[in-house]
Length: 104
Image: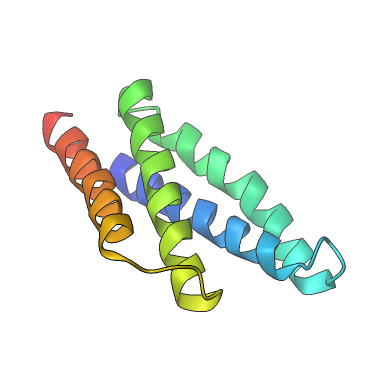
C-alpha cells in the first residue's frame, strides 16, 4: 500500500503544479483551490509512504514523478519544447525511479 501512497503523492505533485500554472498568477479561483489541495495532499500521501519505504527512496521517487510529470504536462498542455534530448533526460529520470523501486 505504501507504493500506492507514493504514486498518488507524485501524481498530486503534478496536479498542483499544473493547476498553479493554470491559476494565471493566482487570479483564477478553481485552479487556486486545486493548487492548495494538492499542496496539502501530496506531502500527506508522501508521509504515509514513509511508514514502509525508506525516506530517501520515497523522496527521490516522489520528486522524480513530479519532475517528469510536470515536464510532460508542460509539453502537452503549455506548448513547451519537445526534443530528443529533453525526452532522453526525462527517460533517465524514469529509469532512476524504476531502479529505486527495484532496490527498495
